[in-house]
Image (cartoon, rainbow, N blue to C red; front, side, top):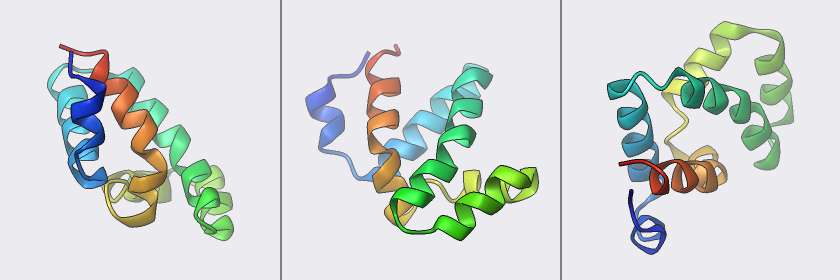
Length: 90
């Protein structure tokens, strides 16, 4: 388990990388699927409405977005999810 205060100090990219690495290493498909589900909402929150609508309709764009969900405004919008996940894991 990681301290929330320490996690808050990390960049969004670092949070993304740690959360995804942990999920992959531990076979946490539930978290990875949750991440894919949250990406369209994160894109909408950053003003990318068209992109979020496309993601809902097409799985391949979602997988591409997953690969980039640790970058820029999307990573910022997903910070709470990464912190919550990392703070409850070993």
